Structures are given as C-alpha cells and as structure tokens.
Image (cartoon, rainbow, N blue to C red; front, side, top):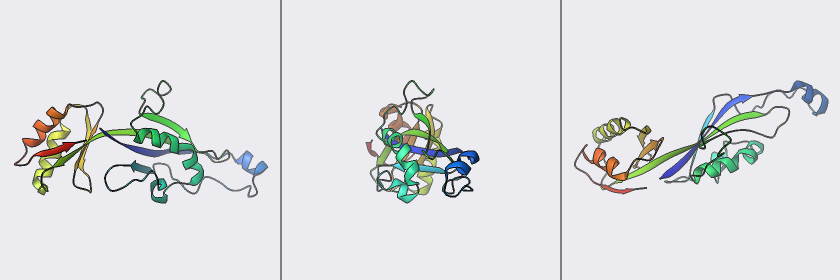
Length: 178
C-alpha cells in the first residue's frame, strides 16, 4: 500500500492585541501566505517527491517547520496522532506564528497503485474507475499522471479482489499492485 498526505487550511486567526503590543508592524493582519480552503497533496511515489521540495515551494517555511513531521509520518503510512484524534490518519495542527496562526488538517491518504501490462484506452480507464468506485472501502479511484491506477481506501482490500474487478473490464493484465 502507498500513501499520500492531504493538507487543508481550516482556519486563520489574528490576535490584534498581540500584534499591536509586540510586532514591528502592529497592523500585520492575517497570514498572507494561505487562504482558508487551500489544499495541498504531498506524495513520494511515482515521478514526484513533493515532501523534499516543501510541496514545490507551496509552503511557508514557518508553517512547514510545524507540520512537516506529520506530513512525513503520513507519507510513511504511520499513525499521525494515535489516541489523540478520532482517526489516527488525521491531525489538526497550526503554524507557530503566535499573532496570526494558520490551522491545518493533515490527512494520511492510503491507496494502492495498480500497474498494467499495456497503456489503457480511455474507455477502459473509465470503466475501471467506475467499477472500482463501487467496491466497499474505496473512497476514490483515478489514474495517476504516470499511467498507473490509484485506488484510495478507507480500509485495505485484498489484491485478489481488486485484480478480479479490474481485469473484468478488458483484455489486459495487472503486472503489479503496490
């Protein structure tokens, strides 16, 4: 099984009284780097390793200092905060700016990467995605830019089950499931 990590900006706070009392610019306001609802996906599989590039530069260094350990844990398939959150694949954290913190939701996304013996036609891809989405425990399915199928899971599905459903969609074989 492979893992990605989704980071979502849940909220931004501003503590004007602290800014006025302690900052060189007492009217600094809210964090200019992030917006509520911003979403970032980190991965270490396929052609990209976005962890080591701070999401290709999409992260503020101060915020990255606070959330990178949770992102790394998620990408390795670990429990982000076992016993603290109601789902060990999830963490709520904030950056370390005490006058204008940004609150993040960090989620481990579990998936299987399914590789094929040939390049699939668009109709085959569509049929595979539709059939796989109807399996229990599947939250999403889509083809990665590198050509393999990603099946995102709430719980693990046996490779045999996945193979049977997918290979019923055409004249091709699965060469590997990671």
